[in-house]
Length: 249
Picture 1 (cartoon, rainbow, N blue to C red):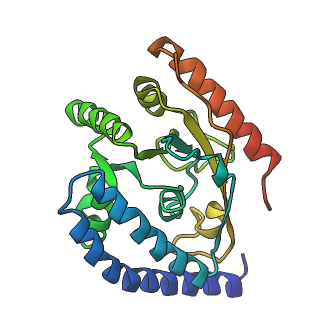
Picture 2: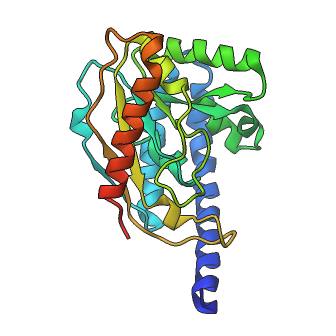
Picture 3: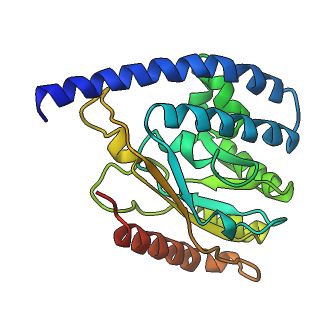
């Protein structure tokens, strides 16, 4: 990478972060109010708030979100939406652009971040990954979320994919949650976020359109826990094939 491109990328990164923080200070107000309400009302306040925020912020920094397949969401049906995870940019993209209020699973440590922690907490089910009790409680909350008619947005890879492979191996959690609740899985794939905010160089970014595609839902009605591995493998293969076929330069 030449010096001009590197310098411009660093400037873009810090300008984008300043704009993000400035707009976040406005969004903290409705997020704080939403925390006063129980679910599902909280999610019904938070989702349109975050959607409006990102509908303004992302296009203004040159990263518009282009969705495909949103009509696959059937009115009155909620889903376990499983999304690939390549970058921190996935977080403000994945949940706001799901058609309808939803919750995601997030590390409890992020909720302790000054200011941003309020926004993170308002839209998430928090879990301490190294605590068995916390993980059990998060499963209970995920089931409650689905029973309340909200979508559940999960990253089955468990962490950001920093490899050259389309996907990291999936964990079982999303598929256990879907089978227990007998809710369909909605595979979804995001393109472009790794290019916007790559792992290296640090504090470097560039503008680029983000493509967010929802694939055909997969029913879980009638499935049992013994089917979770086959379901996981099926979803993994569908998403991997789609990523390979539709990779964007």
